Image 1 (spheres, rainbow, N blue to C red):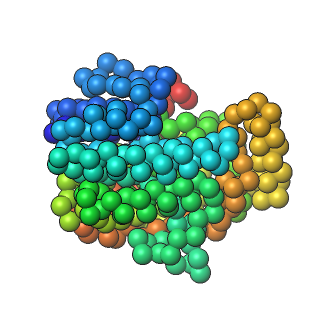
Image 2: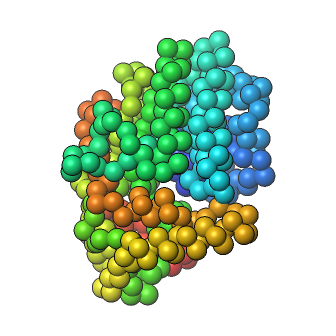
Image 3: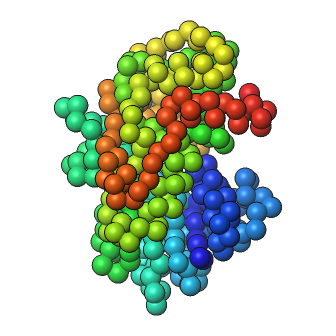
Length: 325
C-alpha cells in the first residue's frame, strides 16, 4: 500500500511508521518545515519536511495514496490561534487534498478525548457524548472532527479519539518515571482521579485497524484500554517496575494554577509555548477522564493488550535499554 503519514516523526507516528515499514508499505512522512527524521532516521521511507500549509504540495503528496494517517497536531502553542491554524485548518487542508484526488484515499484522523471534555455525572465518554471541551486544544480538535465529517460524503474518513498515550519515546512519562526512580511521585490534584490510558503499541493497532475496516468509514471511535486507572495506581505500577515505593506528593489545584500562570508569563516573555498553562491544569484536575472503547473493540476488532502493569513495565524496560533511566 502507499501510505502518507502527517506528523510521523513524533511519538505515536514513529511507532506507526515502523509498523507500516514492517509490512512493506510505501511510506511518505510529511513533517513541519525544519523537522528532523528523529526516530525514523535510516528507515526506508520518504521524509518530506514541507508542512501541510501548501495545498498544491498536499495534493501532490496524496496522489496515488491508499491511506492517509493525519497525526500532525499542536498540543501547546504561544497563542490559541496557533492551535486552530494547525489542528483545525490543517485538517481542513488534508481533507480537501484527499477529496481532490481521482480516488480519495482512506483518511484516519487522530483526535483526542479533550474534544469531549471530562466525564459529567460520572458517565464514561463515548462517541455519542455531547462535547464540552475545556481548552482551546480540545476545541480545535473538536472542530477538526467536524471538518472530517463534513467531508465524509467525498472521503472515507475515520476519527479516533485517543486518551493519554504512553510508552517508549514519550518524554512526559519519562519525567514522571525519573521522579519515581528518585523516590517521589507527583500528582496535580487528587490521587484517586480516574483516567483512560492507551499504550503506544495498542494505539498503532487501532490506527491500522481503522484504516482497514470498511465499516469504519464515516465513524468516530473512542480508543483506550477498557480498564480505567487511577493516578495512584499508575504511580504504584511505575514504582513496581522501577523497584521503588515513591512518596506521593499532591499539588493542590490552586497552587498548580499559580505555577501555571507563572509558566505562562515566562513563556510569553520568551516568546515560546508554555509547557504548563491554566487550561492544562483545569484538565488535569478533573475527577474523571474515562471513555468507553466498546464500539472500537467491536467494530474495529482491536484488543488492547497492555494494561497499566504491563505498559509501565514495558516502558521502563525500554527507557533503561535506551539509557533514559
